[in-house]
Length: 265
Image (cartoon, rainbow, N blue to C red):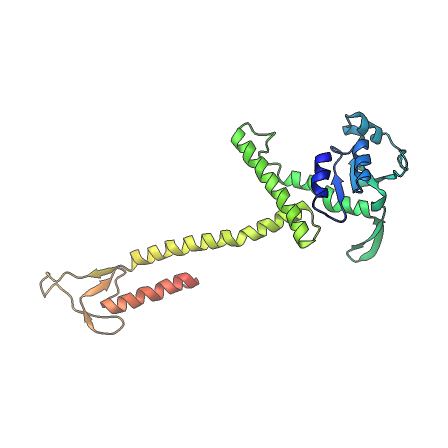
């Protein structure tokens, strides 16, 4: 944690807030962050505490955490789901209220930390449900797949952080994943469309190939037909059975290819 604080402080960010899960929350980390002037919002789970400092936080009541001077930690408990009660510890800089608008209902005033939890933390469980079928590193045995999925996960998290910094929009990671999917879809459709057009043009060239009638046939057998377009006598025909001279056959192919490119029949 000291390395993270040192590396971030060198970037001269005016206000820094750390959101962390119960895996990283501890009493020592809270004191360290407050000593460096950081705001923090962390969750506490009683059934998942192992370290002594984390147990100390897990057994706290809903009041100000006792500590040294100039230390004011707040603990808040609320019911996130029917069978899930969440405890949040946060710094005094995050002790604010916000107005949350609801559809066709009056806006609700609630603590800002609860709103941040719903916007950021609660979507992680949903993301785990949506990606449960994926073979994550702790579920697969092939080490190359483990490395690939791990790197992909890191890239998505890094892209999500950069997106929030550059656009100054705070969206959950699940919404960001959906934005990535929507951005990738047009490129995929374009590649599929180009492949379909190429296949269709190959079919057109095969179906409407130019077949000159052999001039070595006797006059009685060799037919003299009129071109279907310019009505000139021609000894050539298209593979589909229509008679065309050389120039009209070229124009005929160009028209059919344009129809294939524009999606016409």
